[in-house]
Image (cartoon, rainbow, N blue to C red; front, top):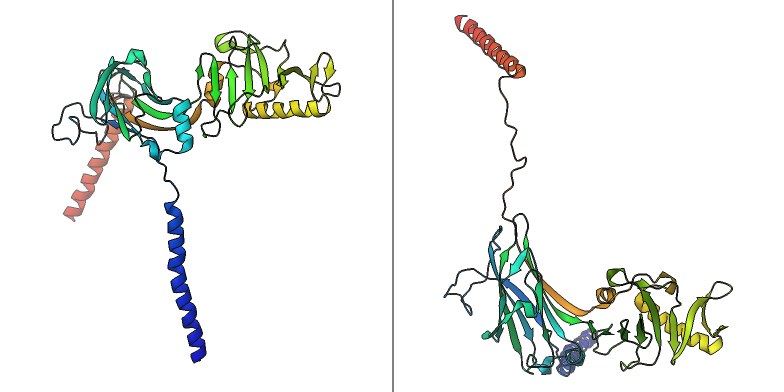
Length: 374
């Protein structure tokens, strides 16, 4: 028994010493892992009247959002926190360098005042015209690039806005979002699909590539460079009605050699150049390009239909983003129906009903009287 007790005690001591050692080892490992910080966004409704007792501002934040009607005033503040450069991940640094970090302020049911105020680390940093960054009835966009906005140290950028409610009967809504986006610039859209700050695809709009009136979608290499593996979609029409031109073949390239995407004599996917079908390794290389690009787009070549810049930005525009929303509830009072149907008197039903009530009251009185006499 003593031997068994000694064995159990020794095991307990081993475990007791081993657990702290194990925990210490993991703690040591944790210290070697950099802790990255995120870019953050807050959106706050502010009071309409100055309050000198409010901490850090002349306007106190709203605890609840008041009901609004036409011509009600609204007041809000969006703030973006950019971490210290040393706290950013390598991917985030690449995104800041090569993609614009955009703050979008969008309003619904509100007309913004003509100007908004910018703050840097809570200090006044200028007044700007909304029209230079957007529209007063829609909102505006501020881009943070590798300019004075990214100073290397933690920075708070604030944007104070006023506005007026447009109409009765609707909520007034403010949406704010901060993120990295793939957007067309000078006819070219560079797309990062996996948030690593390296381009995966490039789209060249009609008139901005060697083909002319068509979209060129290029599958890039691991370094974000072209490798001449692309698909060309000829288009026809304009504006929202622009479509893939069904009268012309969709073209595909491997190593700069263009082939038409067609169906073979047995109705299978094929690639043709100068009247000859691609075979062997050439076919396999072209098929790999086809799979990568059409897999990215999400449809097969026979399904290609409408194609515009807006389509690409809608489906592939967001790399990463976060958003905030505030709502001022509708304060209008509606009476339904507009003319209440009040009870009517004087009709036959009312007279008969009244007579029946009187008869019942008289009968009850007679019964009561008889009981009293008895």
